[in-house]
Structures are given as C-alpha cells and as structure tokens.
Image (cartoon, rainbow over all chains, first blue to last red; front, side, top):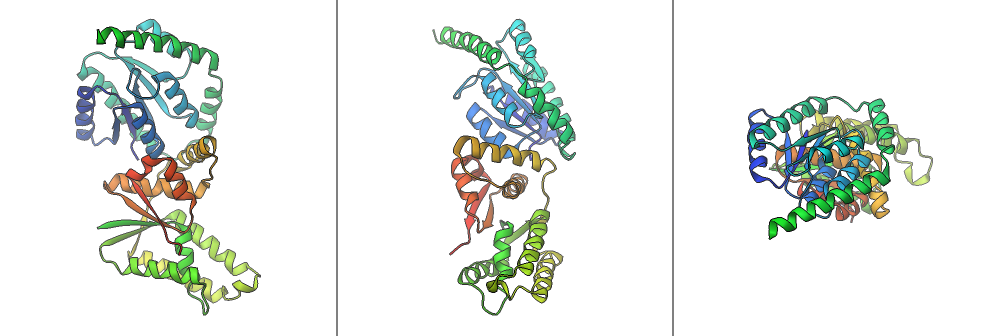
Amino acid sequence: MAAGLLIDDDLGLIESVQRAAAAAKLDLATATTWDEGLGLFHVLSPNVVIADYNMPGSQHGLLLLARIRRLRPSVRLVLISGFLEESDMERVRALNLVDRTLTKGSVLESARVVVDEVRQAQEASLAPTDWREVADAAVAAAEIPEADLTELDQILSRKADERSRNKAR
Amino acid sequence: MSLGYFDTSALMRWVENDVPAPTARNIHVAAQVALLRADPTATLGVSGLTLLELRSVICQDWRSTHADDAAFDADWARASNLGVMREVSTGRFVVVPVPPKAPEHAATLFDLATSQHGIALGAWDAIHLITAAAWAYREGQVVSLYTCDDDFQRFVDHYGEFSRFVRIVDMNP
C-alpha cells in the first residue's frame, strides 16, 4: 500500500514530489481533489496524508482532515498551505488535529519536506500495527473540541472563499 | 496475465465439492475454480488469511453433526487441506502478503460501511479486500476477487474507488 498520500492541486508540486519519490523508491499516491484523496485514503490507508487546505472538492481542508483523523486516528496528518497565515496555522496546531503545518515556499523546498515525510512513513508502514499507539491516538482524537474545529473551519473557509473571489476578479 | 485472488468462501465451496453427493452450488463453484486453475494466463493468489480461515472452516465442517455434513469426515478434511497445500506448494496458488497495517485499515472500512450506509463488512472480509487491493496496487493491474460472499460487491458499490483496484466476481450460481 502507499506509504504516503499527497492531496494538492498544485501540479508543479505534485510532479516534483513524484519525481523525487520515484528516485528514492518511495511509495506515494497523489490526488488533485479532496474527493479523490478521500477515496484513495479509503483504499490505500497511507501512513501519512499531506493535504493542501484550499482544494477543489466538497469541503475545505479542516473538516476533511478531521474525517480522516476519526477514521484512522494514528495517521500522520500534514496540512500544507500557500495562503493560510502563520496565525491561522497556529490556531490549527492548537486544535491538535494535525501533526504538522507547512507553509508553502518554493516548489523545491516544499517537495523536499513532503518527500522526507513520505520516507519516514514508508519506514513506519513496514511495522505491524502498534495497538497501544492506536489507542493513544484514538483518545487524543476524541478530545479535539468539535465546536472549536467547526468555528475555525468556518473562519478559514470564509478567508479561502474571499481569496478565490478576489482572484477571480 | 490476469490476477485472481480467492477469499475463503470461494475455496471452501471448491473443497466441499469433493464428496460423493455435492450440492449444486458447490458443483457450480468448483467448476469455475477448476477453469481458473486450468487457465495458464491466470495468476491465482490466496493469502495467509485465506489458508487459515479455510483450515478453520474445514474443521468446522468436520465437527458438524448435521446429517447433510456427514461426508465431511477426517479423510475429507485431510484431503482438503492437502489439496490446498499442494496448490501452494506447486506455486499454482501464490501467497499474497497481508499488508502489515491491514487490521487497522480494516477497522476504518467496516466503521465506514456501517456509519455511512448501514451495511456489513466483516473483519476478515475487509482484510481480504485490502490484501487484494494492495496486490493490485503493487502490480499496477486490477485483481479479480473471487468470492461467494455478496458483502464485497455491496461494499464496492458504495465505495467505487475500490473498483480501480479490485473487481468482485461472485461465483455463486
């Protein structure tokens, strides 16, 4: 099964990461929409999911990441964004929903970080399930405050929509 | 080359056919298994789970006190186990590895099936599906999952993304 899943509509980043992952013999699946990404998550259950916040699909990133977290609490989640500000990222980190946030810099730098995440995930994917770790993750996931998550998602969604409207003008 | 993966139900009908008066269902399924085994273009896979479950269900038939199961005796059980082991030993059945994280992955699938659609997917069925999908992903081609259990198709009908990797073949008449 794929060790990592990158969900991003930035084709430049996807191509760069795919090239680097192939050269390093890393098992990476990619999706360009949230819906495709969720589908691949169901089938491949990768150890790490690296997802862009603002993506085409049914919803914005946070609630979908929360769905993945509830489905498989021990999955490593990395939120990547080119538009969320550091203060937004700080609020996301405070929720304990994702394991890492990443502000998109250059394609090369972002690709390096993504490939490094997939490399670590590939090593972890060879080990059998550690049920104590799964239990710890399930307890931690259950403690994510639903109201805070919904509120933050609404704030960030408004920002994303506003940005899309501005771009369209 | 085509890739085919047997879950336990398909092979169980095949070994249960090897009695003096098999049921029509077992005759039908066993004939299909025979065709597949005779097809040189088909790579046929089982997993450690298939072999384990098969052995367990063979023992279950052997223990049964039901009148219809009288033919499932010690000789039948020995011959059935040996028949399957022979297929593995000769390489006709390749043993496909169960992914290390399959139990955790399986839990996500039956949670999903129940919470979103109220449908059943058993733990072992989920692991068969995951194993077949992982094999397809590695080989870059669709795997036919041969089964007599209709839970698989019901699940894949709701989660169409699995169709990119696995084609469910119901062997029932």
